[in-house]
Image 1 (cartoon, rainbow, N blue to C red):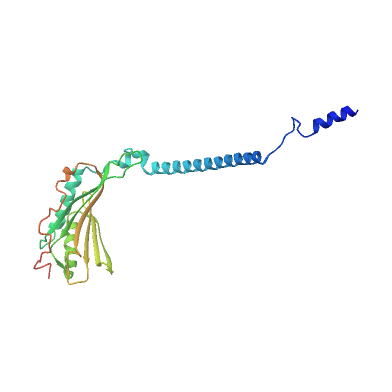
Image 2 (image 1 turned 90 degrees about the vertical axis):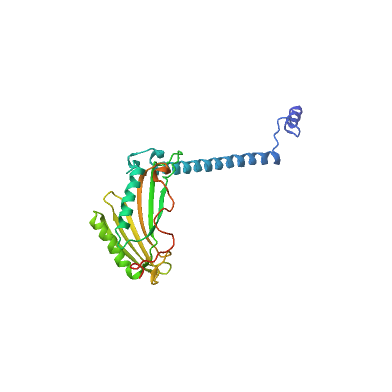
Length: 246
């Protein structure tokens, strides 16, 4: 019996080979591994969320841009560049030449704005085109009604539609402004802006401008529009006229 008890005591005493001892270093190691796994999970979730948001944004952009910029039905041009050029010429020169007594003006030339870029790197085949004639003949404020009547009467006689006039009243920064708009028989939208600073005459800073604008024009080389700089008749400085300026 004594031998058996001694044997048991030896097996259970210090130094036994099967004994397990948990040290502070081991505990810290397991805690560090758990923290690392948590960080990885959180970062993975954040990355997945960012990718999802990017996919949604790209998908929305594709929807807005009509299937990555393919030439769809609503992107077919309304007219060619040559047609736009010729229609602008008829509408603008017809309108300004319909003013009597004759006035002098400067021509802005053509401003062509390209279509939007799509997400696949392509560009819309359509452009927006505008061209303006700015009167250099000084028009006295008292002659504005006569000028408006000359223009709108010309439009009415020549088949223009949707003829409208709108007054914007006095504004601290730009004075008084009226706009007269119409659409030519060929579909060109014209706007005549008459601005008066409140002085006796209409100077270059308060100008009369006749503008033609058209969206949906087929893209073409600049050469189609010719000279796109100032090419109108008359000097760039104001010109006095016996009728319009007094």
